[in-house]
Amino acid sequence: MKYQELVNVYSALEETTKRLEKTEIIVDFIKDLDEETLEQVGLLILGTIFPAWSDEEIGIGTKLVTKAVADATGTTVDKVEDAVREEGDIGSACVKLFSNKSQTTFFSKPLTISFVFDSLRKLSKISGPRSTNRKIDIILELLSVASATEAKYLTRTILEELRIGVGEGIVRDAIAQAFNIDKSIVERAVMLTNDLGLVSRVAKTEGSDGLEKLNLTPGTPVKPMLAQLAPPLPEILEEMGIALCETKYDGIRLQIHRNGDEITIFTRRLENITHALPEIVELMDEHLPHDDYIVEGEVIATRDGKPLSFQNILHRVRRKHNIDEAIENVPLKVYLFDLLYYKKPMIDKPLINRRQKLEEIVDDTVDEINLSNMVYGTSENINEVESLFELSINQNHEGIMIKDAKEPYIPGLRGKKMLKYKAEPETLDMVVLGGVHGIGKRENFVGSYLVGLRDENDEFKTVAYVGTGLDDATLEYLTGKMEEYKLTEKGRDITVEPKIILEIAFSEIVESPEYETGYSLRFPVVKNIRKDKGLKDVDTVERLISMYNTQ
Ligand SMILES: Nc1ncnc2c1ncn2[C@@H]1O[C@H](COP(=O)(O)OP(=O)(O)OP(=O)(O)O)[C@@H](O)[C@H]1O
View (spheres, rainbow, N blue to C red):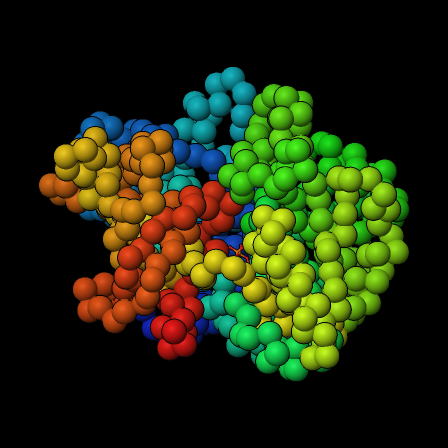
C-alpha cells in the first residue's frame, strides 16, 4: 500500500481535535488493511516503528535530517533552517520546500508503507564508521521520491515527533471498533504486550479469543501499576478490608525479569538498564530461584546505611561508563514488593498471594536484597499502620503505600487499589513548553519556565510559569537544554519541543483564563528534573481538574 494513503490519514487526523472523529478516521483506514501492513500501521500511527516495550529508537538528530532535506530539495542547510524557523517545525518546512522542488522523479516508484517501515528500521540499526553517510543515504532514498506531504510526516517520524494528536487510547478504541472486539479485551492485550502492532494484527486475524491468549512474557517489560493519593486512613482500610501497607522508598522502580539464564532490568518507562546495574543482576542470580520470573521493587542508594537522594540513584542508573567506580561510591539496595510472573503469569492472583509467593522465593539474608517493609492493615489496627508511616518517615523514606490485598495486578492502571500516603504534599509532573530569558542576576539563563500538562488527545496544554526552586547549576543545565530543544524565539520569549519534565510543587490550583487549561498554580516550585519520566508520564489535565475539585 502507498505511503501517501497513510499520509492522507495523518493529515486528516491533524485537522481535527475531536477524539471520536480521530477514532473514526483510524477505524476506516485500518479495517481493511492486510495483516502485515496493519501491524506496521499499528506502530506508525503513533509515529513509531518499535513497540512501546522496546527501548530501540531511530536515533537520528535534527542536524542529519536538515542536511538530508537540503540535499533532497537542492538547497542549503541554512535555507532549511530558515524555513524551520518560519514554519515552526521540520515537517511544515518540508511542505514548503518540497512544493518548490522541481519535479525530477516523475518516473520513480511511489513510496510504500512497508518500504518506509523497513527503511526506518534499517536506520536505527546503523552504527560504526561512515554511519552518518549511510544514514543520510537511507533518508535521501526516501525523501528523493517523497511528495511534499510525505516528506512532512517522514521527517517528523524520523525525528520521533509526529504530532498528530493521537495517543495510545485512541488507537486502542479504533482497534476495538474496527474488529468488533470489546474495548476491555483490547486494553488488556495492550497492557500485557505493549505492542500495538501485534495487538492490531491479532485482533484482525484471531479476534477476541486470540487477544485473550496474549500474556506476559519474561524479558518483555510491562507497564507498571501506579498509585493514587490516599484518602484518610480509616476510610481506606474500611474499604479495602485487608491492606498491604509498605514503606514507600524514594528511589527508582525496577522491573526485573528472568528468562532462562538471562536477567534483564527495566525502569518504569520500560527502558532496559541492565548494563548499569551489574551488581543487582548478580544478587538476583544468587538470591532468587533460577526459574522464569518478573518481580518489581524499588532500588535506593545508600551511604552509611542511610538512603541518599533520588538524584544520586538517578545518576547511578543513567551511567554508561566507570560502572565499577559507581558501584563502590553509590551502593544500592533493592526492596522487592511484587511478583508478576513465576513460572507462569501471576498478575490475576490477589496481591496477598503474590506477596506470599514472593516471600517464599526471595532469600533476603543479605543486606542488599530485601522485601519491602510491610504490615497487614485493617480497621482494627490503624495504629500499626500509623507507626509504619512514622517509622518510614523517620528513616528518611517518603511515606507508605497502601495496597488492596485481594486485587490483581493491573498493568498501567493508576487506580484506587494501590494508594500512596506521603508526608509531603502532592506534586505534578509537568512538561516544559517554553520559557523567558531572565534579567539582572539571571540574564544568562532562561529564568522562568512555561509548564503544561497532557490532555486527552496527548497534546500539551499550558498551566503556569515557574522560576522558583532552581539553583544556579540547575538553571545552567536547564538553559542548555532549552537551547538544544528551542523551536522559536521572540524577544525574551522562547518555545521549545516538549522534552523536559519537571516535578512541580504548589500551594493551590486556581482558575485562570490566561493558560490553555483554564487553570493555573499558585506559588509553583520546581522540586526535581524528572529524567526518569517520559512524555507519557506527564500528568494529565484531568488529574489537575480532579485535584482542583477536591482541594
Ligand atoms: N513499597 C512500594 N510499593 C510500590 N511502589 C513503591 C514502593 N516504594 C516505593 N514505590 C514507588 O512509588 C511509586 C508509586 O507512586 P506513583 O505511582 O505515584 O509513582 P510516581 O508518579 O513516581 O509518584 P511519586 O512521584 O509519588 O513517586 C512507584 O512507582 C514506586 O516507584
